Every structure is written in structure tokens, then in C-alpha cells.
Image 1: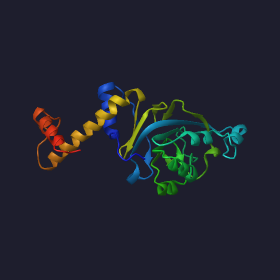
Image 2: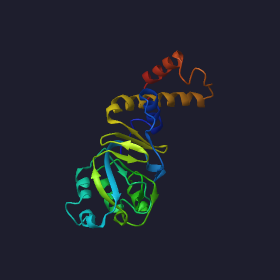
Image 3: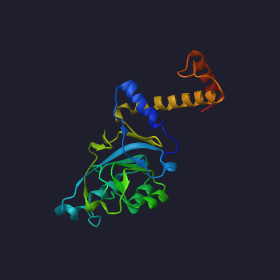
Image 4: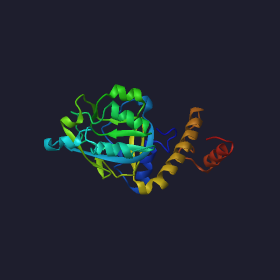
Length: 231
């Protein structure tokens, strides 16, 4: 889990809309498994599930050393975010506590799944940030099977490509296309810092006029605030 976010999810979606015309960047219909520990950012590693086909179940089993999930677990690491297309299904838990424990040990920043998960209390205790649609006791293979990794997926109504930036917090999950990340994320972090400065002045009783959006005088005061060592 990253200690410092590059920006908030809200500001990322705002700049993607204002500066790049991207409207569909906020994953919908998900909730944090733990609202107190749901802030993270990282690179998308995409997983796509399909309705189960019984003749392929043996290949899915973790007892099969070549199962696709083993390949996923062998390649993920610090800064990665699993983004899972589970078809919006709520009747089978995609991951459980054992796999999530391995993800935690490997430094995975978080998991975003537009379906159900199982062992949600145990996952919460692990401290692995997770956004999910629902909790469900049955294992994934009752209804779904892992079919693809590192291909474009649809998660919560948003198209996600491998390597896209994922920014999550209590507001939800934002997806920033990889080719825009260098422009958007630093700008969003700076806007968040400006707004934090403005909020402090508003809380001291100042009116919004000239503060928000900032005029030249406010921008000069903000620059002085930074020069004085504020972060």
C-alpha cells in the first residue's frame, strides 16, 4: 500500500474531464471493504473472469501448478493493483483470505473487483485495501473462471488497460490512462495541495471570492506559503 497518494480520486477524475475530455473514469457500484484503510494508488494488473465451463475446471484449480492464478501471483509486486472484471456477479467470491495474504506479502497496493469477494473480515484484518461489489461465501469456481490476465477489461463500467493508473480513496476508484498519468497525476496532486491551502483559509473565516478559484493575490500568497516550508 502506498503511503502517499499522488492525488485524490476526485481530483483525478476532474482533471481527466476538464483537460482531456474523459468522462468515464470513475468505477461505479463498488464499496471499500474497510473505509478506514481504502486509500491506495498503483498500476493496473487486469484479470478477466468468464462464466464457468465445467470441462475447464481442472485447469482452474490451484492444485494445478500451471493454473493462471499461479502466474498472476508469481508476477505481481509492489505498486500493482489487481483490477478484476467479474461480470458484476455477486454469487461467488473471487478471492479469499489466503490469496489476499499472498498479495499483501508481495506488496500489492490494492484490489478492485466489480464482483463479490469471500473472507472479507479476514481480508480486512490483513490490511489489504479492497473495493468490491458484495460479499459472497461460495468460491469463484461455482460460477466463474479466470480466463485472461493483462488484457483490457471492463470494471464497474470503466474500461481499464494493463498499466493504467488506479487511484482509490473514500470517494471511490479513479482510472487514469497510462499515457496521461505523467501529466494528470502531478497536476492533480498540486491542485489538491492548493485546495488544502484554500480550505485552511476558509476555515479561518475568509470568504470564497478571490480564494476559490484563486486570483493572482491568492496565488502569490500560496507561493509564499510553500516557500515558508508548507507541504
